[in-house]
Image 1 (cartoon, protein in one colour):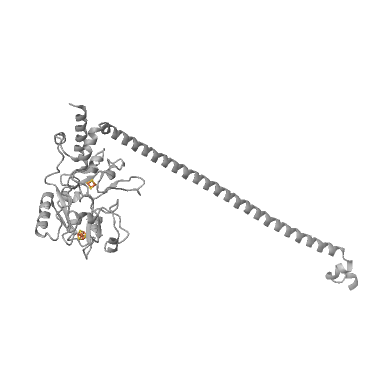
Image 2 (image 1 turned 180 degrees about the vertical axis):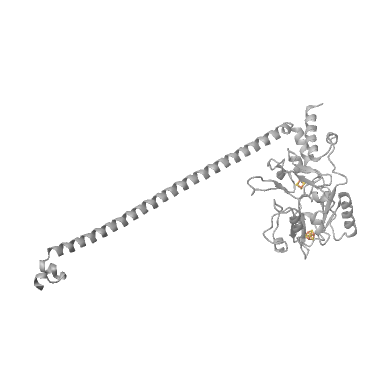
Length: 369
Ligand code: SF4
Ligand code: SF4
């Protein structure tokens, strides 16, 4: 077999295992067409009223940190938001030309049929599940953040404010709930049925039906049917999807786009993990140095505080000693003064004439006789 062809297949096999397909499928050279019975969600923005109930359900189901503003506060819709490590889904408001009312679109991970995040992750932290969801295993993640760069929709986000064990975060399509036979939290709560859960194939049928029945209400484009090789999250809209902030990403999946490049530069396949593992080791080393520096700073601070405390104690003791000495001196001076005074009085009495000296003692016995 031609070496270049062999390495190209090797790259394809690695990618295939990340997405859960067989080696034979990968080796066949055909792209992965997803799981035929995979589920998905259809978001119909003509039904969405921007109530943010889906955001609240997501927060509850995933036990996410409480946002600054309450979910019933709709003023947050005045600013365009994006998902982050603490917010797996957001609803944004769009004012489009020619329409008197705004349009609302929910955004989250699109659960691509051939996820770029999974193909970029060399430790296979991402899995494309047969239920259509794309999930992430933080135990395998080395923190290289290649998934963030690879995702065409800029979905995965990193917990930058977690200094000790930062992870990538994103919507899981409520994979654990689907496994239990439940609906994703956002779908279950939506009061307007703007979200429909079902087999992706059935959702495409529903979307086509709506476009056919209501041609004035919808543009003839189901976003996600072909974008990035197809996604399990699909969208219907009454205006061009680009007016709702949905980018044009083309029909080719990211793994298909990169497989050629990997074949043409086969060294990348072998070297990439080595380089990234090296980068990871360097970053771990930096972390260790930072921790050592921090420990040293704490030790130095403690020592200097101890020295300062000892100096303050010594100063206090010196002062107390001085105060005590001054008090003793005062007492001595006082005692000496009193003694001098008593001595002078006695001396004066001793030096006085005899009669004066007897004054207080009465007349002599001779004078009485
Ligand atoms: S939208 Fe991004 S994070 Fe979600 S599956 Fe696709 S590539 Fe991965
Ligand atoms: S719950 Fe439904 S109607 Fe409300 S914002 Fe979310 S998708 Fe739109």
